[in-house]
Structure formats: C-alpha cells, structure tokens
Image (cartoon, rainbow, N blue to C red; front, side, top):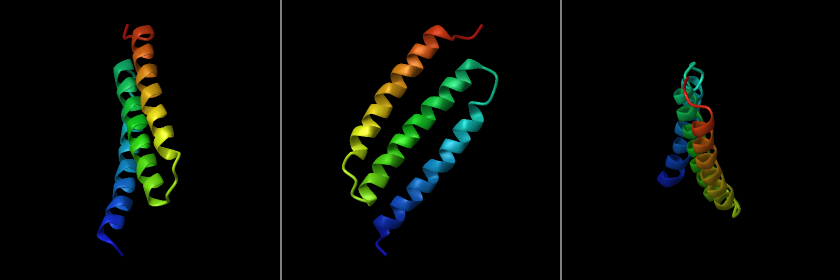
Length: 86
C-alpha cells in the first residue's frame, strides 16, 4: 500500500474525530460554542469530502465542499447577527 493512500485514510479518520469533538463542544449552553462547533463541523466535513473525492475519483466533491464552506460561513455570520448571547 502506498504511504499517501494510508495518510489519506488517517486524515479522514482524524477529521471524523474532530467532527465528534466539535459536536461535543457545540452542546454547551452558550451561543458562541454552538457557532464554533457548527463551523468546525462544516469545515471538517468539507475537507473530508475533498479527500474522499480524491480517493475514489469523484469529480463533483470539490464543488459540493466549496458550497458547504461558503454557505457554512454565511450561515454562521447570519446566526451570530440574529442569535447573539443574551
């Protein structure tokens, strides 16, 4: 097995663990922790989608991950403006 292939699989596993930790952090009561957790999950999922798309030669994963990052940022900013800590 190629070392690059092994490192891609390890990266996907590490990103899954990062998503679980971010979901745990977003379960706290403050709005800022929820925003932080949701944005980390979106970015980690987008990177994992890029790596999986590269592993299995799926061409549209790049477009989906770009849209996820863009809409995740817009949603985070919109929620921060509307929600806010009280």
